[in-house]
Every structure is written in structure tokens, then in C-alpha cells.
Length: 135
Length: 228
Image 1 (cartoon, each protein chain N blue to C red):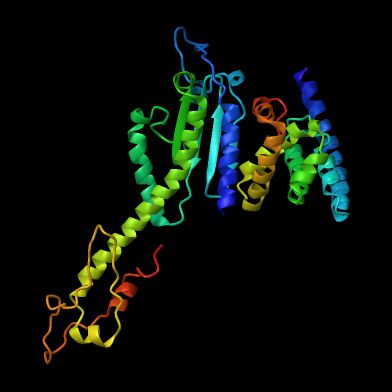
Image 2 (image 1 turned 120 degrees about the vertical axis):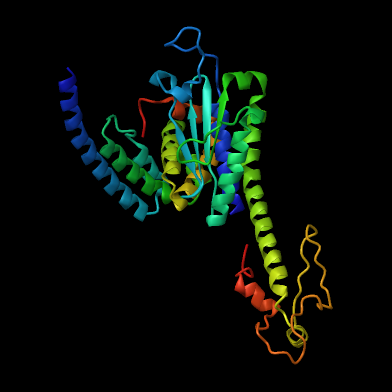
């Protein structure tokens, strides 16, 4: 049973990597057209990848990171983002804050403040307590 | 710069407000024991995701929560060697008196400068908001304290060097070059003395064995002109 699950995992990982590849290409084209919010939504779709594979998570993180760093107008972005994206965005913000890279951290801190105002402390707490779907 | 500090502290404050939901939870393994689960990490179901909030490579804050306890570890910005030493000594001084602070941990977590351990008992005795305000205030004050310590060390160094090297200044040097005799802080009330007869080692006409050093050269000799 465990063996079968591991096998499914490996297959799944390849699939997910492929999906992330297509996602990243789509996001690049969206960013070229200055559609930052759509790019972020596309990046957050299908996240977090339902797998324990670190490579998938890292690949997904890179894609989301690209979309987050391209955002200039935070208020507008949060206005057009629906509530279902708040939790997953918060998880990626914390991942961004743990990197220690200065521009990433600055951007993530700014978005974090605005997002907390909107989504409240519950969003943070869901992010902390969700040990199964980590990013 | 100030804005990024404000954002950093706001983020930590919000995270702490969300994470500080602690309740009493007796130990599951041993009867009649009550241990802070975040320290032991024996049961994964009792632990929440640890969160690392960095402002840049030098400053970060690690927040680990569990059902009955919360651990906050801070790494303070240390720009140079002197600040490194001052921070280590100062925070060690505080950590050794952890009893008085109640929420301080005696040893910082590996990789950090100082750690706090807040348990459910602290939350019962003290107000949660006040605890969070204390931590944030602590973070602000630490920076200021280290800066003040560094400034006082540099001031003392400059004064000591000036006083010591004044004995090598000659009369001629004083009155030909314009000297800026600085007024230092009140701890060392050094007033500019027009007659430096007690410092002059040679009388006019005597062979000079010690080169005349001017005030400006004193500053540059110790590299004290550009400190802080």
C-alpha cells in the first residue's frame, strides 16, 4: 500500500512539474502584458501542489515569487483578489519572508500588512496550523 | 528605512497576536508532568508550523508555537565587529537575569541572539496584548541600547587617545595651526585649556626628540575621526 502510494507520488511529481512549467510560461506572457493580478491568480491556482516532493514545491514557489515581485499596486491587487486566494497567498508570503533576501522581504512585508488588514488574524492562524498542505 | 522597520515590527506583532493562543496541556507521555511542548517537540500533532520573518540577511525572527507554549528567537543587526561584541555581552547580561524577566529564555536558540519562551501560565497571569507590546518594545529598545553603547565606547576611546597624545603636542603646533578642541559630553568635562604648559615637554631651543603632533593628527592616528 505504501509502495503503491510512493509510486503514485513519483508519477504525480512529474505531472505536477509539467503543469508548473506551463503555468510559468503563461505567467511570463501575462506579465509582459502588464496583467499583474491575473498572473498572480494563475500562479496561485492549483497551489499548494498536493505532493510531498520538495522540488515541486520549490518550482511552484519560484513561479509565485516571480508574480509577487512584479506587483506594484498592492491595494488594487488585493481588491481584485477573491477571498479564497487569501490563505494561500499568506502561506507564500511567509515562505517569502523566510528567504531573507532583502527586496523579497520588503515586498512580502508590505503585502503582509495589507493582507492582514483585509483578511484578519484568522488567515495567519490558518497558515500556521495547516501542517498538511505546506508550501 | 524607518518604514521597513515599522513593517517588520507590524508583521511580527500580527503574527504573535495570531500565534499566542495557548492553553494548559499536561504532558501526554509522563503522568502529572506539564512541559512546554515547543521545547521538547515530542508530539508533532501539538506543534504548529514555525514561521521565520526576515527583514534582511542580518535581522530575523523565528516564531515557533505549540499548544501550550510559544518560542520567539531574535537575531539583532550587527554591523561591525564592535557591535557584535557589544550585542553578545549585553544580551548575555540580560539572559543571565532571565528570572527577573520571566518570559526570557536563559540560552538563545542556536543561530539567534536572544530567545523568549511564553507559556500558558504567563498568558493566564499577564495580559496577552501587554506581552506582545513588551516584545515589540524590547526589539526597538535593543537597537537603541546597542547604538548608545557603541557611541559611548567610541567617545571614551577618542577622549582617552586625545588626552594621552596631548603630551606630545608642542606650543608652536598649537598656535600656528587652527586646532578644534572638541567639547565632549558631560561625563568627561574636558574644557579647552589655553595654557597647555603642563603638557609641553620641550622648551624653545631644545632638540626635538618627539615629533610635534597636532590635534588633527591625533584624530587620524587612531582613526577616530570617522567613527559612528
